[in-house]
Length: 391
Image 1 (cartoon, rainbow, N blue to C red):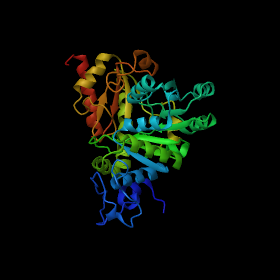
Image 2: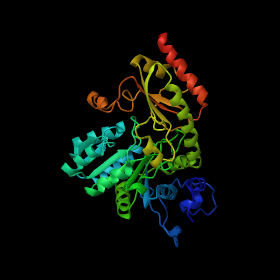
Image 3: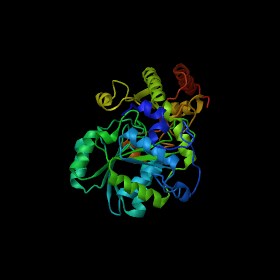
Image 4: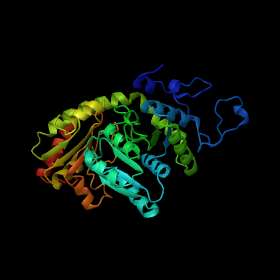
């Protein structure tokens, strides 16, 4: 019987296929390195070594594959490990990757390493400009197309189905980094992607207690390939970390909906600040891809990218907010703020920062589960502090 996502996530043991002799109602932790074949006689699946397969991890992988409508999933020890596993599985020396220009700083750094070590070339494009994307595909033999939607931190929305159609037209593998939206909002595989990848560190686990990643393949062929490479390279997530991720799943949809409402309210209030030049948030009707947001996404992630009048005000907001702090990552229960040019995107060159519209007066806010009025007052007092130079 097909069930809704909320039901799937609230009943992990029922839908994960795990067989626990004691009837555990949450994923039990099989925190063991090895398994005894003799004691598994008659079992449907035989386990030998936890790097290859583990019942706890396999259970979560089954849930993620169902949530993303994929054939199979591999849970990795970090989000960037899932991206690395994608590159290692799909690419060989000399291949070309076409990637959204406004991509996660860790992905940008990894591509630079792959260029130096493995001769992997990266082409960058604005994926909201499909003519630019098609021109690059037409004039280059692109092995892999990779994008995020929303992008981080520009918050552009990519038409995933249109890019999937272009990738298919030019025989490229297509992958979507779904870390920000998650499967609670959109399902890239249903829109034509070959892979959906996400950092479970963020909304999926939701509590900032674990680093984790996952890569879900649409086809059996690609699933078998990523499983092989994960085992060969030791990418798999530990059973205890799997357990920590699982704790956030039953509340995922409800957390994201509550945070979305707070973000909408906060975004509208910040537009009234004279010290604010612009607010980027896909939940605002003024967002350039707002109509696409309504078609493609069920929930808008509670991330705001705010350009202040100058660097001094941005620094004051970072230094003087009490509830946001200065913390990388996003999607957790606590609110966070950072200047991406100095933290998550510090590896970008000055030239590339300009291309994606990032300056030292740009602040990315991740809106948590605190009272939204408290968050608003916190930003107000931090902006006020910039006028009296208290930091």
